[in-house]
Length: 158
Image 1 (cartoon, rainbow, N blue to C red):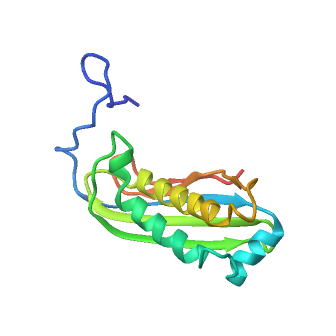
Image 2 (cartoon, rainbow, N blue to C red):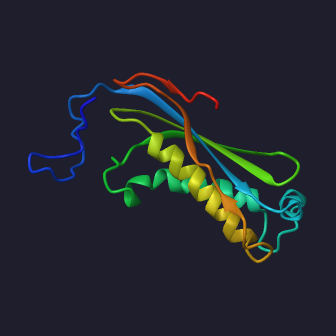
């Protein structure tokens, strides 16, 4: 596959998508925050002093998806048609975050989905850091994507 992120001088450029077809596109990304069982219990009980951790993390993830092009230099600003974030856990020490982002456009939303889960995970950390500073974020990964010239992708489970 030829990479198109370099100009004739070998310098980075924003890819020209002018000639690409508009298609429905979606991407799902996942991340995880590992923490002490007491921290996860406090999140689920709503007893973190800063407020409802998951509600704030959900809004942060949605806002981040909408602003991805502002802080990932080569990303195109995209009109997103949907951002949905879900949380689950293992009832012990892991909080799972999944974001699905959709658009109808000329380029995909993989970076927006990855940005959404990253911002949500960072928000969880920020809201809980007074309780626990050694939380671990990750792995963060693209789980799937649909649409576009390169077709669909679904991550194979290890």
